[in-house]
Amino acid sequence: MTRTSACRLSGSPLEVVLDLGQQPLGNGFLLPDEFSDEYFFSLQCGFSEASRLFQLMEQPAPERMFHQDYAFFSGTSRHMKQHFADFASDVIGKGFITDDSSFIVELGSNDGIFLSHFAQKGIPHLGVEPSGAVADVAESQGITVTREFFDTNLSRRIRDEHGQADVISAANVMCHIPGINELAQGISLLLKEDGVLIFEDPYLGDIIRLTSYDQIYDEHVFLFSALSVQSIFSAVGMELIDLQPQLTHGGSMRYTLAKSGRRAISPTVQVILDQELAQGLDKTETFIQFALRVRESGERLRSKMQQLRSQRKTIAAYGATSKSTTIYNYAGIGPDLIDYICDNTPLKQGKFSPGVHIPIFAEEHFRSHPPEYAFLAAWNHEKELRQHNKAFEDAGGRWITHVPDVHILD
Image (cartoon, rainbow, N blue to C red; front, side, top):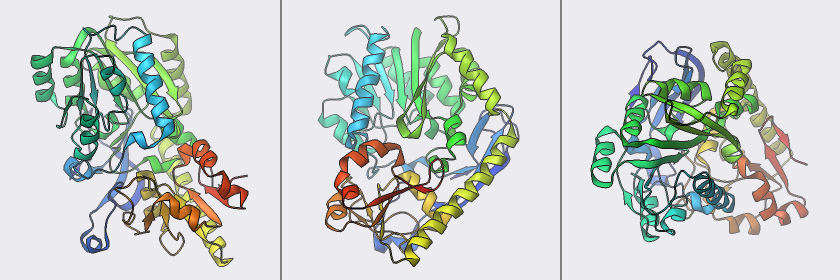
């Protein structure tokens, strides 16, 4: 575990702007005999006006979070499969990858959902994925993977063995890596002079706007804005050349960067930077106000569920998400309010949710034991999940959400 009172980028003092209390690992699903020695940490967030970085004060060791039994598989969502197919097409369509002489490296390649589109075309590639279970799936599909954490040493080894990369990509990964200065240096070393870095992560602007505080958990040591990404990479001679808002994870941003002066800059970059300044993403006060809305959201969600329980209503949750771990533990929502969680990830089924220990079943249980109300824990997949579970609504079932405020969906 590492704890800091200084910004990981600038070294300037951090001001605590949000405290989500003692939290377990977001993906730390467990069995009953593991309850007694479950790991918890203090989920406090700080902000630095010098770097414009919103970050955790304390983060568990990487080995606790990313390991052989890591339970997040991107390929379980039809929506995410299409998203990564479109992402790959965009990279190729913009000419960043041209033919089988190109080389693409993905940081945090998970189950290969993105790199598979390049492997199928015979394009040289490498996935960097330290989590064993998902790396196994990627390798079974013929994707080349190194099971290591990315740093400057690995960057040099990849460069020496494979050459420099035309594209370095990442999706919902850069925000996981606390050594942000070394990360930026490693990317700059590995990237060709005219190469590009393309990554997407949950977007701080959307999180503030939607009060989606469930995006804050152990893995997300940073939540980025374009302003903070600009600060991080300017130190290694790189600049933003494009920004593309995304719908994934309830609101993400795709950042494209290149070495300074090597590529034209889209007008969109300045437009979004100006929007962020207008939203106050460079000011501590913005995050203090956000914390007040977070407290109100947690209290309202618990109150709504207590009200339904007092009416003898049954409640389940759909999606054993790492995001919902933050909600349950912050708002004090456990088996007294939620009967069970359903999820289609086999590694999670038969286990219990981190911290509050709600049982997890396969989604067949949701159909055979339908609740009267279901908390939409995977709210960022609302459209897909509601289409998939139309029979639940047709039978009178209702969905509860907390984004952008606590309410029951029509």
